[in-house]
Structures are given as structure tokens and as C-alpha cells.
Image (cartoon, rainbow over all chains, first blue to last red; front, top):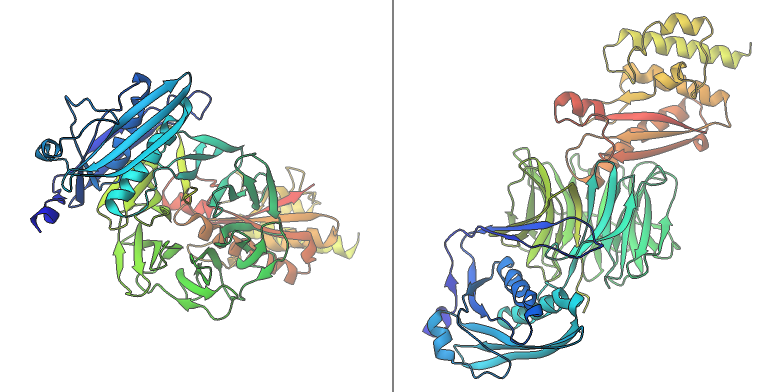
Length: 430
Length: 164
């Protein structure tokens, strides 16, 4: 029993870690993201991440692994000074345990021209056993990808939950009248521009396979929904009806989008195939219906409506019918998302004049407010459901922020130049 | 002079008089001055002529959390409706806007309620619905960039945008 309890290091000090991670990649967007973490009371696993022996060029990999695990708020890093380990080393479990590390990751890297092969090991110093090992290879430009992959393996082996370090996020960066739809790694690094425009871009939505983005662009003078394939950059308008075309949300199968049109007056929810065929109106509402989002099983949608006199969140079966109201606290509850396990709703609520991120247990009815505002918007779940990404205003600047889903760990991914908004966390892709 | 033009000019005169009397913000400086007299003396009714009331009075302002056309803007809507009724080949976009607070998509829908309210009034005044497209920019195109109550009021607006 003692062995189990001591594995959880009760962290009660405030973390205030500023990691200035430089992208340093030519030809990419100039934005650099700063990560700040603050949180109290999280349970943390103590782990040591040793440098990989074999190539000085690979020093970035353990650094990124350490940054990933720290950012999750679920790990505490133990120093590795004096350690010189390679994939074949015999580990002195007792010595690492004495240093305070319940886990140790280490390995070797071999280089052949521009090609690197990482042999990684993860051991449990308490059980005195290797719990993971892998060989991962790539070129110098793959270093971050490799590091995120190893961090994902470590995270999953130790927590039992799939890691999200290899996933990506989409968001809109506005500088003056220039808008860019960007995609970056989940840590905000490696930003790439998907679309540049002189007009607003809103509501990016990831396809379930992570290969396409649907979004709304005002480039033609009004809102039109486009679907863009990331690998090729090819894009096409899939909904350009009279009036507004907005709020795209993919069905879990990836074959349909729920969209919002105003072609018959005020905003109503429709579904349409991703090739633009088979438009169907989902409901007839006397007032606004918008911000549709599918439940992970595809059986129902959640949406925002002011049919009850104030904007509230409702659910309706995927083939339409009677809607059921879900939120009852407060006079402004919008932008709903259903958690990956289908148990919880994530949304924006206005309380005491501040827009804050909240969750609601769909079966328990328990509401928890995760952030303090004043202007937190556009929340989306990490694909493992452990965190939520949202846009925030801090000290007058708009930033991207992440909160653990229990509200205890907050971090800021802050773009140094411009206004960043409309974030959407992408799905698992491998 | 056809009865249609006379009707248009009468509507313009009423609109000008209403605009001149109200203290609400106007689209451009000085738009309200001298409108009543100029309209009755043959004010040019051309939305693409900057001197025309159709170009100068292009906005309907809404109260906080309101999506009905305020009475003092009825004249402006009637003026544009009269012009469009007499120019069935001319199309117009009615563009709704909101202040910057709250959800992007919900604001887009709220702006649409404003443009839709204006468009409905126009069809009731006899404009062919095919000439009108009601759209919204939500909070994406704020005219006033500040965070004061006056800035918010300036952004609770629907504009007439004539398409060439």
C-alpha cells in the first residue's frame, strides 16, 4: 500500500514555469508561443528524462519530452545530472528511486547522414521493470514529431490514458486586417498557414480523420463554408446559400456536416454531405438555432438556441425532432461541445459579467466553472478529454489557453504578435 | 413624373425629416442636415452617388439586446424600400452587426436577426424578396473598436449595401 501511495507526489506549490520554446524553423509563420503553467493541488508522477546518448544534434528530443510532460501538469521532472545512459544500460532502480524518480526514460540515438534512429526505454523504478521500449526514426526535421510520439507513449504507459502531444490545433491569427488560418502542434510550435485572407475567417472544425478543415470565410463579402484538405491545400466552398453559411461541425463518420444557414430567415441548423449534396433542415425553430456539435456516437447534436428567451444549450436527435434543454444556470450558455466519452458538456457561460469556460455532467447534472474570464471563448476538448483549449483575454491581449478538465492546471499559449481566436483542438491521427 | 417617383421622393422627405429630428448617430457626418428641403427640390435618388440620401443614410441602429427596427429608423427603411421597388433590377445586401461581446457564431446569428428584421420590413413595404439578401458579420466587422457603451451601440447596426 505504501508503495502505491508514495507514487503520487502531492504537489501543493504553485508552478510558474515560463518555457520560451523557440520554433526556429525557417519558412514557417513567425509566431512564437509562450507556455505558462499555473496550478495547485494536482497529483503528479515523478519522472526522470535522461538525455539520449549518441548524437548532440538530438538534444531537442528530451527537451521537448520534458516540456510536454510538464505542460500536462501530471508529471514532476526529476533531475538527471551525472547520468550517462544508453539503450543498453543496466538501470540501478534503487538509485533512481532514491533520487525521487518513480520512472526513468532514456535511450540512444544513432545518426546516418540526415537520418536518426531513436531507441527509447521507459522503466518503473518501483516495480524494477522496463514498461516500454520503441525504436523510432526520422530526419532532423522530424525531431519534434519523434519527441511528441515518445512523450505520448510515456504518458499513456504511466497514466493509462492516451497522450495528445502529437495532435494539432487550428486557430485564427489576426494582425491588422490580415487573417491567417493556422495549424500548429498541440504545444503551439511549428505553426503553418493554411489560408491567408483580408477578410475574417471563423469557426474552423477538424474532420474526424484530421485530414481536412471546414471553416467559414468572409472573403466573398459574406459567410461561406469551405472544406480544405490539409495535405494538398485544396479547398472548395461546400455551402454558399443565400444569407449566412456558418458553424460547420463534422459528423463522427466524417460524411456529413451540421451547418447553420439563414436562407429562410434567421439562423437554423441543417445537415449536408461533405460534397455539398443532400441538404436537410434539422428542425424548425421560432428563434436562433446555431453552434451545432455532434455527440461522439453521432446519435444526437447539441446546439445553442435563444428559443427560451436567453441563449441556452439544447440537444436534439441526429434526425431531428423535439429538442431538450440542457443548461439552466445563468442567462448565457453557448458554444457547446460533448466530451469524447459522451459524459460531459463543455461550453461558455456568462457569470457576473464574465465569459467563463464550464463543464456540465450530462448524467450527474453537476456544473463546474473552470476559468475566471473575463472573455474566454471557443472551447474544445483535447481528444483524450483531459484538457480544454480556448481563447482568452489576458492583460488586454488575446491568447490561446488550456485548462485541465478538472480546472486545476491552467496554461497559456500566447502568440507574441496579433490577435488569436477560434481555436479548435484536432483529433488523434495515429 | 410617375407616381412611383413621387412616392419615392415623399418617402425620402419623411426619412430626411425623421433623421434630422432624431439625435441618434448617423452614418456620416452632416447626413441629416438639409435633407428635407433638398429632397423636395429633387434630391438625386442614387445609392452610388455619395450626395444621395440613399448613400448617406445606410444604417439602422438597434437597442441593446433588441432585434426589432426602432421606430425612428422606419423612414430610412421606407426610403430604401421605395427605391428598390422602383428599381426591380437593383439588388441590396442588408448587413447585420453586433457588439464584440460573446460567442462568434451566436453573434453572427444575432446580427442576422437584425438584418432579417430589416429585410422583412422591406418585403412588407413591397420590395421583391429576390432583391434582398440579409446577411450578418456578427462581431467580425466592428465600426467602433472601443469597449465603451457608445462603441457597443455603434456596432448594433444593420447597413444597406447596394451591389453593382
